[in-house]
Structure formats: C-alpha cells, structure tokens
Amino acid sequence: MFGSVYFVTELSTALPCASSLRGSIRYGFDLQSRQLRQRFIHPLAKTTCSVQAIRRYCCFEMKPKVYVTRNDYARIGLDLLREECDISMWDEGYPVPRDEFLKNVAGKDAIYCSLNDRIDKELLDQAGPNLKVISTISVGYDHIDVKECKQRGIRIGYTPDVLTDATAELTVALLLATARRMLEANKQVHIGGWKSWSPMWMCGRGVKNSVVGIFGFGRIGQEVAKRLVPFKPSRIQFTSRTDKFLTAEDLGVTQVPFDELIETSDFLIIACSYNVETANLFNDSVFSRMKPSAILINTSRGGVVEQHDLIHALRAGKIQAAGLDVTTPEPLPLDNPLLTLPNVVILPHIGSADIETRIEMSRITACNILAGLKGVKMLSEV
Image (cartoon, rainbow, N blue to C red; front, side, top):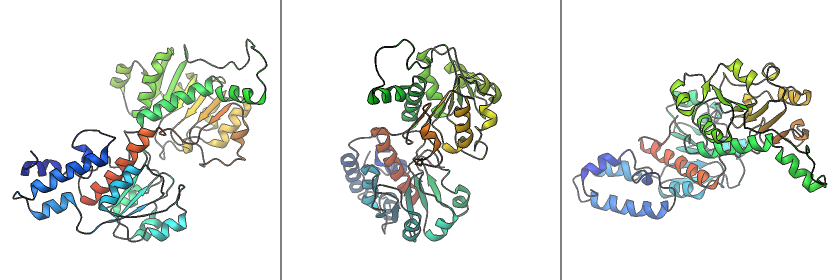
C-alpha cells in the first residue's frame, strides 16, 4: 500500500495530520508520525509520482511563518507546527497584548489563536496579504471577523467536536454545585460555620422530579440532556432555532417554544452559540417570567446574558441562583457585584478544561493550520 500511487491520492486530504490515517489517536503522536512519514516519503520517491505532488503534500519549499499568541498551548500542537513551519510566539502564558499582536503579525502566513485574541479588520490589515489561515483553539469564533476573512480568502479553523463531552460534564457539575449549594457549604467548613448536624441547614434543590430546560440543542445541549436522564427529572425540554423532533424523540426529551421554556423550567441551562440573535437575550424581561425558584446555568458565552439584569434578578429574588462558567468580561473584576452574591457559583471558563481535551484541541488547531497552508481539507473549518 505504501508504495503505490493510489496511496498518494487517498492521503492528500489527510496528510496535514498524520494521525488521520489511523483514526482518532491522541497519544504517542510524535513517534508514530515520524514512522508514517518515513514510510510515506521514501517509497513514493521510487514511483512515477511527480516531485511537485510530493512537495505539495509532504513539505513546503519554504517554511511558512506562523504566529502563536501564547506559549502555554499543549505542546503537541506546537511541535507539529515546528516540524514544517517557522514559528514566532508571544512567549508568555497569558494573552498577547494588542500592541504586541499588531506588531508581530505582519507578514505571517498563519495565526494560531484563542478566544482571547480579537481578529478584526485592523489586525488583518496589519498582517497583510500573506495571511492564509487563522486557526482558533475553541469551538466559538465570535472573536474573529469571519466576513472580513472570507472576503480576503483567509480560511478559518476551529475545534468544535472535541470539547463536547468535557463541556457537557462541566455543565452538569456546575448545575449540581449550584443547586446543592456546594461552594456555600464548603465555605462554612472553612470559616467555622459547621457546628453540628441540622435538619434544614445548607439544603439545596435536587434534580429528581424537576423540569430541566436547555436553551440551544446542538452537540453540547444534547450531551447535557443524556447525562441528566439518570438523575430522573420529570421532564427535559429544550428550545432550538431548528426543528429537532427526531433527535428529541430518540433522547426522550421535548422541544418547546422559548416562552414555555423560560416559564416552566426549574433549571434553565444555556448551551447556545453566541450571535446577533442570542446577544443579551437573557435579560430582565426573561428573568421576570422565570420561576422564583429557578436556577440559571450558563456554559455558552457571557454575552448571552445581560449581566446587570442578572445581578438585579438574583438580588430581587426573581430567580433563586445562577451557575456561570462564562461572564462579561473575562476575567471578572474582583469588585464585580456577582462575586458578592452567595447564590452564585462562578467558574473561570473551564468548560473544556480536562487534560485530554486540551491536548486534542491543540493538535487539531495545528492540523487545521497545516491543512490550510497546503490547500487541503481541514479537520474542522468555519
């Protein structure tokens, strides 16, 4: 197989990420990729396949220049890029300052970025005509001016599927922590508030026999629903912008209008994407129609919730509590009123933060860059 021209044809769409040839392998990638590369290049050199084809799919005549916006991405992705690209990097473990980003992006062929890095017209102008690929290590891409990139022929890679399970797990954990008042209870242990057993002290809400509502029923929303079924809620319902009757039937959940979702849910989970339609959708008007005992969970984007209205709703008792993995801005300033409320659990945007997921996200981000530079299919493209 390795010595045939047929192999070159089949390989051309997978080559930028050698692990694609053997399925979704996430570990031992460096060693295996070297083995594959040796078996690929040398036998083909003896066939009638043209040198141009080998150059197109195996290497670059001149190393492309890639800018990486921080130094603490998982190493596997950076190592993949170093093999074939000339990398320059903001050599700190925090987002690159805007002025540094603008100064160092000029003349680059690709950018490896995260949701902290704003890619707008100003930055694209500064990068110049060489820029061919932007790859973000995130499922969201609202930090990228997609329209402007498309007009310039710049391809955009992202990492949608790999973080679904991790985010769904975190969503359920955040719901339980908020409903059962875990952080409040933990604080009482540390400050001496735990005196003795008391029948009603630190009592929270259970999921069993409750109505769980999910706003947004894409990959993450569906996985959250699957994980909540064993907790025996009386009903799981969702609102989606598209008809998902068959999916709902398979999962044993119910699609309902938005008004019904917010008015009848005991737990309301936001799992939608952030766009013009969802920006600040959850505002005072919505909170006023929710149950006073309702608990809001948001693991999508902070901008979906009008945060000042949420603070007012929590203080006024319009809803009971909130669990947030996302806020506006991020990080949240230490003087933000949300941090003073005992009925709020706030996490620092760690929805996808399990080790295996972040490693795979780094690999996919790098593979998207290599694919884009070689003009072949990305693993995930906007």
